[in-house]
Image 1 (cartoon, rainbow, N blue to C red):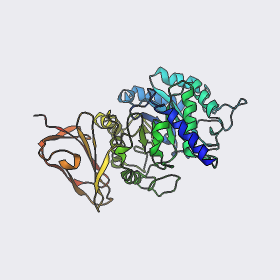
Image 2: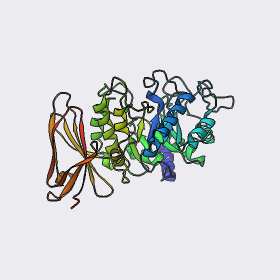
Image 3: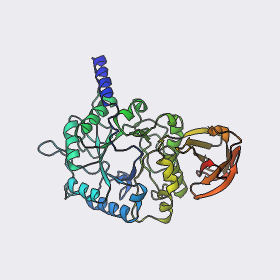
Image 4: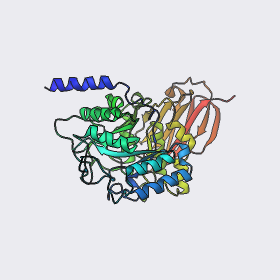
Length: 409
């Protein structure tokens, strides 16, 4: 029986092929997730129609949509605790008095996309809300009828004997069968060798356990990884050889960004977080409040030169070149036009570090003259540089993010 089940799953994957090359998600998505806005990252598990409309209006009025922030995604916060009399998913009527179809129309009228959360198990991860297990086809049709553009599927309360591959393949096929192009995001925490099959059933797939807004945080959640903090994720992704894992319509997801979450994630930590997500060609889904951006937050999330690294057409995640005993790290990736992005990172908590990269380490001849542009400063800081680039006194947790281009003369 086990062999027959595995054969059936294999056939499903062959049939899917490039099923999610449907015009959605060729490049990493950008946008906002409800999880840590007006909420301590799911502590209340509440989102509302009023909140979402206010964020949508603010994204448009601040011009964030023009930079690519176009997905408005609800997390585990929107559903009623029970299905309706016909077994359909339904939104909580107090939180969404106009219904999700009306809200989808509001969002679409402003040129944005709308997404929601479900679970491949019998209940969602928080609040005992209905999961989609046993209802994949019905839920997919309901979601499509509301005009949704994005579905994130979590991995809680999955019946024993049902593999992640089977569950996510079945939901993927159900969504595809609706005929509506829907971007599918698996949230199974990096389990079951997701890198080998995630891109066949979804445009984005979670690479590890949940990210929470701390620099470091112990491993206290289900899933792969070294911990739940930003630094923990950076060190775990380094072990994955990420440049081999991503391509158009197929990106690894280290979870959403916790940019400048109050008290626990400061400016330097947040800028470093954003730098790595961009280097990895990861989704840039900000879970903190995007309304009325502070000067610091605006400087991070609106930096078009850093966004361009994330949105580069190669969709190739960057790899770590080396990691010193003191925590000095250098990462890099190739870009479409032949440029190279290099990220210098000080993981040390206390001391500044000097770092460097040589041209052979980024697969360039030592004698090749390159111009060096600092992406966060948004200015060229050296021209006709050969052999190597040196960074002095990089502060704890901080980065220097540079783009190396053929010399202009």
